[in-house]
Image (cartoon, rainbow, N blue to C red):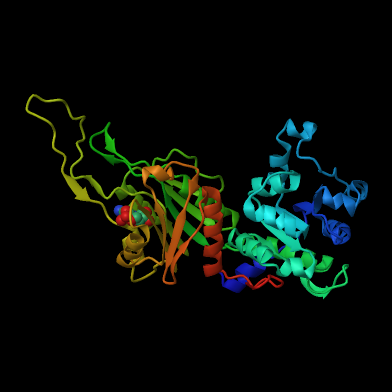
Length: 422
Ligand code: C5P
């Protein structure tokens, strides 16, 4: 197994070959974004610029287009690109979205989820990491409303570079100057080196429901779609992990680029998990049936005049518990899931201790939440540090945040500089 340092070195990258969507906000610092474009291009990145209306007061679309060698996007209702859902495309094809300068207004829109122009719509539609380079008057920066928005954006997983302290165009002094172009380039490169932090790590993910046979044609199942487990496998793969994806018969397709092991029952899942060990991390997202039919018939059960069949159950092995409690070769990080319908934190906290896993990802799967089988999830991460409630998010976003947390734990990255402390 590689050391943390080795994994870190292998994943180090710059912005070369990356696609960067650069949103230029309306402030005097917009001039410095021209220099940013040049430096990113020097590194081999390609930059697609977006100008807000206010930005056009400071830099012209023509100068930005000439420098970037790309069409400048300015309009939410651009008929040519709208025919192909332009704004969604723009935000999805990028490797990173950079907002420089990020004005107080743009940050407020982002924090509140407004989508009333091209820039804010792109920021709401994107599933790509976002880096903000704020620039504004010092009093605007220090205003509680801005600080509140920064806090919200941090908790949404948005990254920051700057602002720096110094003299401003308005004659005041203090924090609010946009980071220098070379600092922004370094922060952008750091974003890419933090992707791929799980290179060299072998991670097992169980997913989906299990089918417990009654006879050759009938089985007992549950409503798990396998969507969260598949999203997790994808996010871990995107961070460079070698993923073994052990899935019950789920609706969703497994991601490409992972080793897929298909199983039906809990017993088969247990055997597949044992065969996949050792791993660096075990993520047990499957909804494993607690019981199986004690002696499944090898012939189809027939209707009978003698009455209804009586099914006897046997307890299935608890895969999560047995891996968590391994005395030799236990994965350094074991993560369980807890689908609860009531007293979520209390039940999941007790489950963490009972099973012996390190983290429990708990969620409320009452039918009214629409989580089971739905596109979103609202999770509470339970660890020895207590319970941390995440906002309701797309399952892909839950997965990428969890993958980042796993990377923090098994391959910690050096602390980013320039992030405002809150
Ligand atoms: O015991 P319960 O089903 O509530 O616990 C859920 C967690 O335990 C999930 O992480 C699930 O994948 C795991 N589990 C397991 N084997 C079982 C039952 C649950 O690995 N037989």
